[in-house]
Length: 241
Image 1 (tube, rainbow, N blue to C red):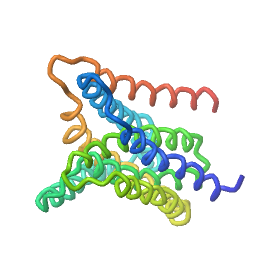
Image 2: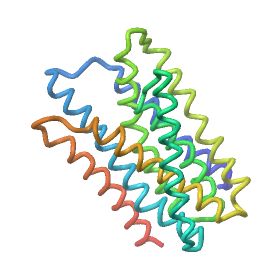
Image 3: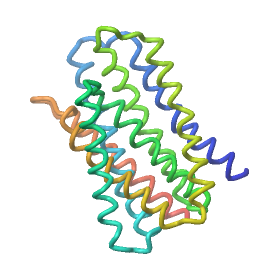
């Protein structure tokens, strides 16, 4: 299989989980309401755990390695968190707060760029990163749909069409990473670290606060499950290679 086709398949799979999550969320609400509320918060936490796992077991280690263990990795990671903060604050001032949708787009695109670069470098963790992106997009798509659904002008079909329109962003970003970053390993590493900083900001600013429910313990466990799933994938990749 050619590398370009591999990138399209991997990023397309990861992106398709966005409308799949939205479609699941478009079904009738779960009854009783407390089960639906706890399930939704569990998914928010699960997505946060996957994001944290992707950062700690793939993006940061691969990013630092690609930058040849340079201390420049630290300011790049910090810059990612700061820029994501600026973007979110700017959108918030314009009264377009959609933390789940915003977080999904902001982490999906740079991760897809990194995925394309990893395929070009022949990295064995590329399929793992694709799996993690897909697993995080699924609950993020679910929660983003419910987030948008809470608005007065919500239209189910339009929301799902918007989510479907986000899918091609992954293959496009992946091909950009493949074409322009295959010979620039340090830049690829910087992108992974930049995305990591942004993802960490989103986890603790938007995702973690939303996942918590008073006197409920299942949602935080979702974060643990998500992180462990990412860790298992990384361990399997190491055992195979």
